[in-house]
Image 1 (tube, rainbow, N blue to C red):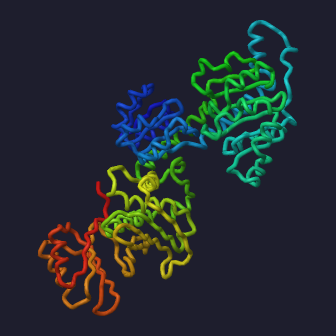
Image 2 (image 1 turned 30 degrees about the horizontal axis):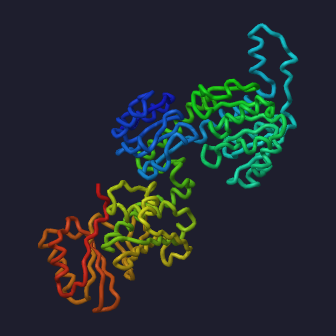
Image 3 (image 1 turned 30 degrees about the vertical axis):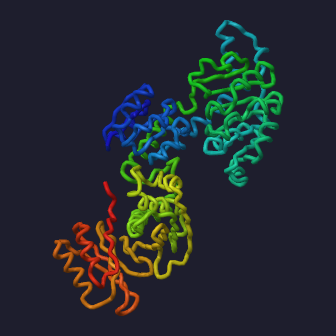
Length: 527
């Protein structure tokens, strides 16, 4: 496959990619240039500068995965990528230490006025009294965002004997306490902190955490640090507060526009400004490159990524447990859609037995992929299946139960549509997928790429006649199973065949007096 590397990556990451696929390094492309060539590639690697917009992704007909060598993915249009079925992966652990250390470094530089003192010294001055600093010991550090970087900052701040409070709506008080953080509301961070640092992505909820509305609530003498994303603080508001003396100092590593040629922070007093260096250490560059590139290789090989930001994050245990059931569930969805002979309006997926102990979201996505695959010209995969289903008004219900009857685990799909309701179920036995139910008929057969289903009256010679029709058409039967309600009543027969069954052959079977209906099921995905 072909991989485009659009920003500089550590050579070790490039070596990982080149060991598996063809790699093109094209640094400094304009948006128009990137859009013009992206259709030739299966994977794209970026850092923070290249903007992967919906307009660019509209040209990415082959693209399977976007790798972001770093944490934030605000330079990638996640909604557009998800709609297109493109996996977006990042490297959230590679730069944790580097970003945390940069945060502490900027805090200390502010507290001790290091940058201003250095500039004065280089002018030949010796104005010691102008650079009287403050100690961080005993001061309150407010951290907004308690992910890996926020927690790492807290760990280091405790070494400086600071009191640490934090805000994160997705972190429990118990988890925060493990890092010596007292969990509080955002208002408390703004009103009580001597130093505020943010470690959040940029989105509607986080844009302008410090803004014109709450600038007056800040504690006198507060210092602000941003090693997260430009725009989390309102730069104009912060700059004005620095000029007025409402804020003692501000240290920024990231900006609303990069490079920040027009930022008011450039002329504001009491600032320490660095050019987006949070992840720029030799160690971090190596780690994020390797972490992103390894995941790109995994996705291209059909494996799950550790940090897919637009897919459910599954534990290794869950990934192992559901892996055999993903292709089975996709087959069940494909089978059900064809068996219905009409549009599917609702899907209920029942996950039973040992499998019910795990996150079933990817199983639901697999079922939807099978159902929708032949209903749309769009690429359908585990990433965008739910989005496409929602857009089509397909109602999805997921249920779990520990009771799987005689099976260790069982996946059952119930589909409803214009032509009624159909039920199909399957399991894994001895490591192999098995079809075990069609409507109220229980059976046991390995699914095959081509299958014929007949519902017929249980009369002597009927099975033989169906076999004869197939034989006369040179269609070979590889396996079969039969389920019936009672002797000489209705029966359902499932045949695995090696050769395609034409409409004429299916019609010949259907015209047999004892045959009530016949289906030709193509369970293999169309490529």
